[in-house]
Image (cartoon, rainbow, N blue to C red; front, side, top):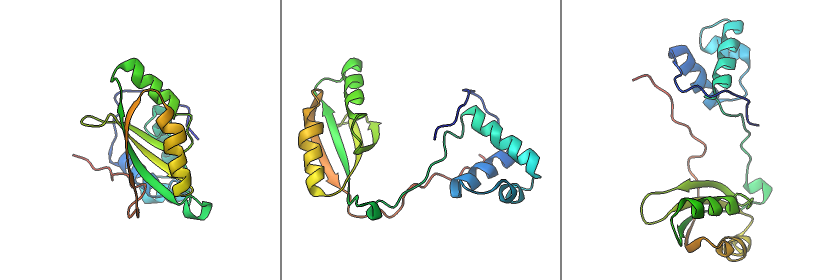
Length: 165
């Protein structure tokens, strides 16, 4: 669930803020009591810092990671897209179209041979094929589609540990 926040361009983080962020990346459900003990603060100042980080927009949201195989989602793939015309309006139309597809988990704009990389998840190979042919290939801005099936994911949802320069 996204947090309501104001955008501040320059956020000064000290070592305690970094410790809080690292702890939350490891376990977003950590209690304030556990978090304050971990970062050597009493609970009230710890909670105050946490709220400040949320309100600044640095912490965008808290989420739950689901076990996809237990949900019957068995195919994960990267799909690379080349647009028929690489203009701002064409890109915006493409992005609007694919935002409607629940199979699209992530969309990244690329520099190089492909214009976009999509992370796709479907129940099985048949539903993946249907997604490609019946949905993605019908988006008028798409010129070329290349896909790669992910066999195994060895590291998932890992965020970089924040360190001080």
